Length: 492
Image (cartoon, rainbow, N blue to C red; front, top):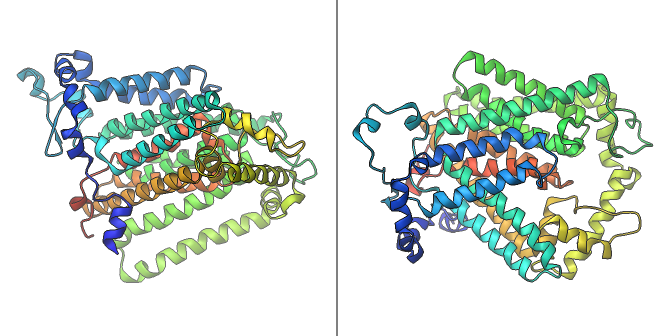
């Protein structure tokens, strides 16, 4: 049984041997020689980290992926290709350190320490294999799409996100770079949340009909900050809440810890003011996963009594607080109760009608769908939509993936999730045994993935670049901890 699970999660897969035997890998040898003499590429991983940091620094403040963010994603993709084709050889899974002048090697500078360690090539992880497989299925769906030109636009965008994932998984191998990139995102999210709270205090006009006008909560303003949509803002803040919470334990000095506590409070408050029911569902799932993983992390240090009762007490306390909040806070009670009224809520009714049309689209093209991207969706959906229920997406991540890449694509996506969560769990066990505080970032990444997925059951805002980049950031964060199977499966 254990062997079957290892095969399912690709735990025994070794792409490193394939890479070393690849004919294409040998053809690129002249480029690797050129890289050794290039001053810029000598600091390639550090420059890649700068590109990644810029993505998260500007993402919430630009309107869409046709703006400067799209240009930056293209630059990231181009730089990753340059780094990859000129990458050095690996010996027994370890990167060969390029020769440098003696004065550059000793003593090692701050910049050298920043980009270390650069161990086994991150191209050889099970997650990378699944990402490549998912891209291949999307490419096949594009080739067979009834709207090929529109699907190619979606495939181009997907390719940029997946290459950004590959670049992030590479540069995040360095613990210092990992901490810096997370810090950049958390500070950007803090600015976004502060502006959102300011909108709540000063009042803000809704940019769209986000609440049923007959609902008691219709008069409650929903903040959207710089992102222009409260549901999008809620999805953007979920990773910030999880990462700032684990930063309280991962950051070592008191001043950063106090800053992390402030971030948790501000981001959570802004999330509440979004009035996003999907965001609240994602938040509840994320907090539950965080609590379970944090309990698991500390359980080996607890007395037997608390090892047995700490988790039930913690879960019960959180559940009691949530129930009490729903009962006491009337705007929260109205929004939560609207989840269960079915078609009596206009937002629910709209989604149900869209889902019905999308399911019919899936039935007509069940294997590989219509092709990736919202352009392809907008080209096909009007043939199926019900009167007065136009939509830009399927309003559900599983349905969106199924309609774009069919049952084959949805199966591959679910397989990617299983492989990612399994690898994250394995590495969490390793770091927990070593008492490595970097393991807290893994806790935050795993919880964020499940929180975003829960939100995505009733919305598709994480296809927007501000959130999609964060989704692949979490997967890259998990992939960056990859280590060979014998080490990862060490008993703890």
